[in-house]
Length: 100
Image 1 (cartoon, rainbow, N blue to C red):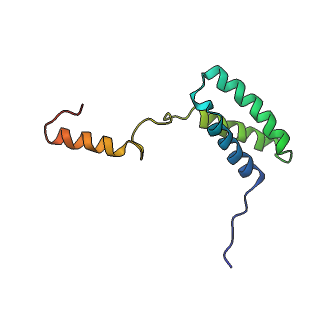
Image 2 (image 1 turned 180 degrees about the vertical axis):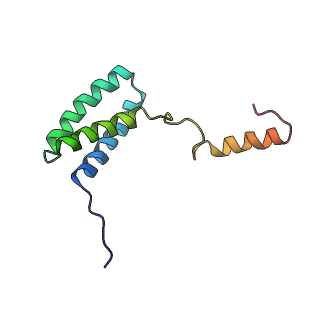
Image 3 (image 1 turned 180 degrees about the horizontal axis):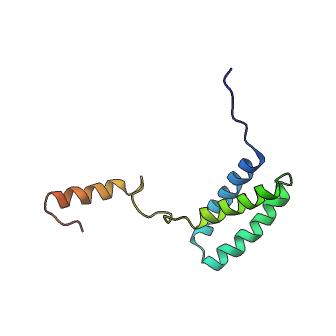
């Protein structure tokens, strides 16, 4: 039998936090509102996952804040959703036609 990965308490808390972020549309909120939401939600998560160590709590907060404010903003750059549009524009430029 293969060695199966068992999710840790931090894994479950992280997954739930990311799910809350998506469901609550907090990615579209103003930065101040995001910060307030994150503080309140982390307190809720700490209550839901009381076995998180102090280090795990810090890591959960860092992960949540990075998810809210990634280095490359959500929906920017070449993604699976806009890749075909990007490739079409690149092909038009190669053909000497400026992309609109």
